Image 1 (cartoon, rainbow, N blue to C red):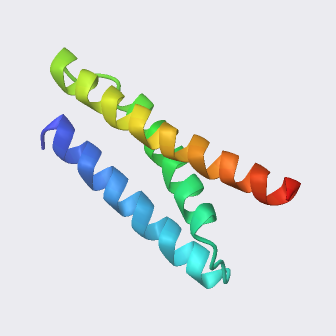
Image 2 (cartoon, rainbow, N blue to C red):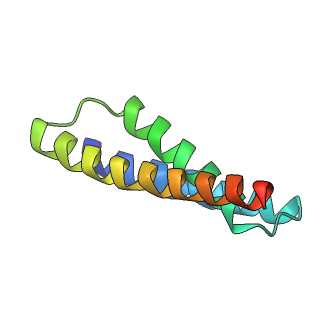
Length: 83
């Protein structure tokens, strides 16, 4: 099995398992799901750091977009607390 196939399977299984655990725990806030998914995706991407340069560059772009979403959620939460 190729490296990128293992990466995709690992990410998919991890996110599926996380969804099952969070639903079991009764979490219903979308920001919690997004934050946990983001952290897991970034960790798994760093563990699979052996991609070629083109794939690594594309994953960096995706990671940057996900992090931007996290900053948006964080700012929204801060504004909600302050108001």
